[in-house]
Length: 486
Image (cartoon, rainbow, N blue to C red; front, top):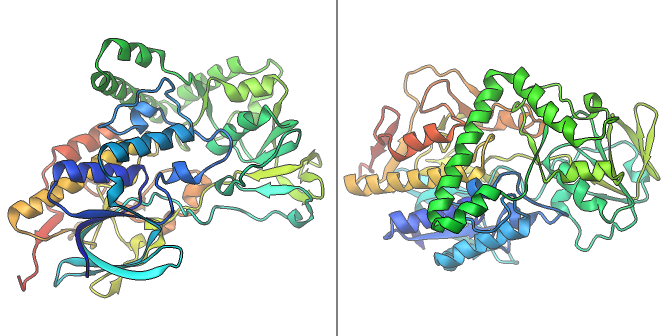
């Protein structure tokens, strides 16, 4: 049976980052990347809806080891996917990627200090099995095959098309069509301006408002700095500038929510027509960063609204009818196409069932160690990004820390690293302190975090950087060992 030192699951941003760090820091380790889909890229290959883009700047969403050199700081999906392909090619990672390989189950055996991985491969889903010494899950945080899609009364009567952005049909023709987009999150605010150029009209139908912030699609300072400094140095400086600004803004939002809210709404007022009802459509009931802010590059959403190509309706859906949507207020919206931008379905470690010495792991009963490992589960790490900053910042740090663990095991002759909760009493809290619906719907299935380190999940890159890169590996929680038989 094939044995690998490390199996990485997922060939998106996190998986490619993990492979790079593993190759550069642990060059003697054998590894492979299993990707369940027929292509690499994860989110950036899966989503194909009009205007698909990042809502994080590429100086922080990009890898720490590969400078982003394009002019646009807020990049579109195809550009990000190309960046991932370039990275994988430059570092000879693609030869390690096995496409259409889906992990079915994972079972740890303490006597051999190995994971046994059952998987399927190819279109025929042929069964296979291998073992690995360490398992690194880079499968993201949501279900790729199933989105959050509530049922609406009367939708079977609608004569037009109903589409979810996660499963966008190829070559959808919406020219001259009336489009209604249900939702107010990042996907909705991206779709509205992207579709408004060709659609007859686009309506964003929301139950409640979201904070929306405009910023330039290009970073003029960054583009100028690259002209006078080497690209890697310029990239590092811009990256840290953006990280520090994100941290400052998040801290201010937590400490002074009323002032930050007033400032955000003041900026928004400058972008919208004087007669626009901001209180109804763009003034949330919650504080900034209780949910993620929606980014609007170059004010494209507001431009579409001012041009009359798009509008915002804040109301609740009563039912669908044959030609559109009837609202609880009694009003209705005509539609040829309805897009249900109703969110993602969160999933723990891609829904893979895990066992440790024959006992099934219930991750909802575990505590998260540094936001990357799980109490009682050995030699398993996973990548999970920040809610208030770019995903890749945490993914890069997690990959670095995995490599530190692997090198420590080799240096000490150990085979197993296991975070264990001792006698201390931890105050359990949700892994993510976020009020977004897609988060609150799923948190009961996720690991818990504690109130003290290393069980507390910091949404703070600087704190994590110090802990992951310089913190000691042998603490009172992480235990290193080898099988007694050895």
